[in-house]
Image 1 (cartoon, rainbow, N blue to C red):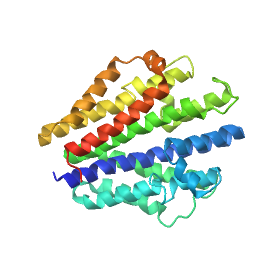
Image 2 (cartoon, helix red, strand yellow):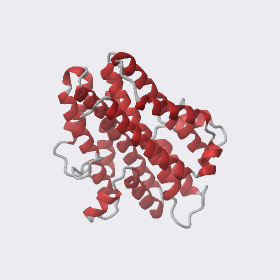
Image 3 (cartoon, helix red, strand yellow):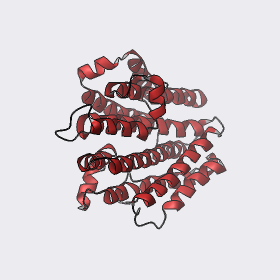
Length: 311
C-alpha cells in the first residue's frame, strides 16, 4: 500500500470520528441547555468549545456565547478546522483520493453527509439544529456500519486506527473539561447541575445504559471516570480505544511487515492502563493524568505518521 493511500485512509477514520463526536456533543449540550438554569447552560456551551479546542477560534469571531452562535460555529463554520463541515469536507476529499479502497456504501455515507451540509448558512433554531444533527449522526453511523462490512484488509485497519486515535483524544478532553473546568462557581459537587453535566458526558459517548449495567449505586463522578478511562469493555474509553489501536497496528504490521515505535508506544500504554487503578489517577491529579494522556496520544499519532511515512 502506498504511504499516501494509508495516510488518506487513516485521516478518513479520524475526521469521520471527529464529526460524529462533535455532533453528539452538540446534541447533548442542546438538551442540557434546554433543561438547565442559565449558568449551567452557558457553562455547557463554553465546555463544548473547550472540548473541541475551538474556544480561541470562536472568541476571535466576536460572536456571543449563545446556543445558535456556538452550535453554528461547531457545525458549519469553514473557519473552524474541527467543525462538522470542515471534518466532512476533509473526509470526502481523502475518500475521493482512495475511492477504490472503499466500498460503495462507505463512500456514499460520507458523500451524503457532505451533501447534507452543502449550502447551509445557519443551523436554525433548536428543533432545526437537532434534525440536522440527527442527519449527520445517521450518516456517520452508516459509515461505521459500512466499515464493519468491509474486507478485513489494510484499508479497514488504517481507517479503524485513525478512528481509535481520534476517539481516545476526544474522550480524554471531554472528561478533563468536565472535571477541571465545567462546574459553575458556587455550585456544589454532587448537586443538580453537577449531575446533569455528568449525565451529559454519558450521553455524548452513548454510555448511559452501559453505566447502569456496570454500576448499580447511582451516578458517581469517580465511577463515570473509571468507566471512561479504565474499562476496556467500553469502546469509547481510553482503555478500549488503546486496545483497538494495538490490535490495528499489530494487524497492519503482519500484513505489511512494518512495525516500529508506534507499536511499542501503544503496547506500553496498554500495559500501563491495565495496571492502573482509579484511586491512583485521582491521587496524582485527574487533570494532570488526562493532560499527559492527550500529549502522549499526539506523540503516538506522530509516531504512526513516521512509521508508515505519511506525506
